Each structure stands twice: as structure tokens, then as C-alpha cells.
Image (cartoon, rainbow, N blue to C red):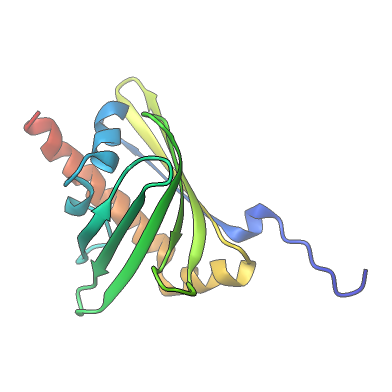
Length: 160
């Protein structure tokens, strides 16, 4: 078929992995308990304001990421699958009536001897959509977010 283009999922995805020195149950709490994720979510210099959040299948997390330059980035996550404490799957978009950014994310948490490997897998509808967020800095932003989470986990361990 002339003009037909088949894109593999690998061409449309971003995968970021980090191993942290914390048990999986603690990492899960940092991702799912009320008031935790706001303390570390987003790249360096960002703050997060949550407007609603229900971590359950069909539940919604609406939030704004506030950039260091004062730019606000609205976000919406709709949870599709929750397997405590191993896996979260959700649809993520920019919380607009016709989203300009939308992808499916799968986060897995694998424990090994008290350490947890977190894998963030984001699959975009097209290669072009993936490339646009890469150009915007999504990979570095994802790495910074996981580094901030690891720092936050250390404070969680200190305070029980």
C-alpha cells in the first residue's frame, strides 16, 4: 500500500528508569497517598498544585505544574489500572477540551533487596507527538522528577 506507514510502539515511546534506595511499599506511598506526590512531582524548580485526585481505576488527578518562570501547565491523569504496589497505568493529557498533548503512561515498581527500580513508560499516539515532547525537554524533566522523588523518599524514611 503506497503511503502506508506503520509505527511501532518503540518509535512512539519514552522510557525512563531509576533505581532508588527505598522499599517498593514506600515508593508506592510516595506515588499514591494524598499530599505526597505534590512534594516532588515535576522537574527542578517546578511546583505542583492538585485540584482533585482519586487514585482508583477511573479516578482523576487534575493538577497544575507551575514552572520556575511562572508558566502554568494544566494536567489531567485518568487511572486505567492499579496493581498495588507494582504498577500504575493511566492516560495523561493537558486537561484541555481537545488535548494537544496526550499519552498513555505505565509506571512499574520492582523491588530487589530493599531497593526499587521505577520504570516510566510513556506511549504517544504518533512519533511526531513523542518527538515534540522530547524537544520540549520531557526526558530530562522525567529524570529530574525521579531524582526529586528519590530525595523525598529519604525524608519519608526519616519520618516513618
